[in-house]
Amino acid sequence: MSSVVFVKWVTCAVDARRRQPFSTAQQRWAMIADQPGLIGQVGGWSLTGDAQILALWTDAEAYTSFMGARHDAVVDAAAQRGTYRPLTTSTGAVILSVPGAAASVGAAIGVGTVLRVADCEVHEGRDEHFMEAQRTVWAPGMSAAGVLGGVFAVPGEHRYLVATWWPDPEAYDRYARDDVPRLRQRADAAADLRRLSGYVIMLEPTWQVVGARRSTTTSLDQRR
Image (cartoon, rainbow, N blue to C red; front, side):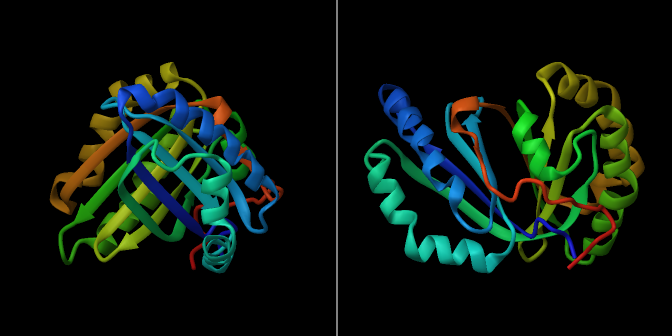
């Protein structure tokens, strides 16, 4: 079973005049570093100006415990209410992990400066092919291109999130330019995908929260 088994992906609308208060409040989330089960949390600004945040947990139970016992108190303590408007929240189990230059996904959280998230909706009947392509085409291709690590999660029926950490914008840009067209063709992605929403987030270092269990290891071939 993969060590990192649960993901939360959040997008918030933040008015321009509230960006600094929101960012300051987001920095205060460092207080959850001691939360049992937290692997880490990162975030930054999308190209459209939205705030996007991704958190990894050891399991759904740890995440649910945090939401029930502590989440609202953290939001209040961070003075974050009123600085944003929630747009989307997605959660789901991680079924594959992407190996890379970092020793683990937890380690990738600590050193990555760019987060790429692909939110994919797959045609009915194409799920198995899509997952096999992630395992045999996309993951090896990203590893060869210098990815630090990543996860492949299922937030809903026929829907998948692929989140990967990159060492710098140049490494991601080279991959997107030189490797993605070839990998997309090999994976027959056009036949699999009903919808693809892609996000490239320049991570805000001060938003990073690294949990006590960041040293967990992951393997691409491990599945729940």
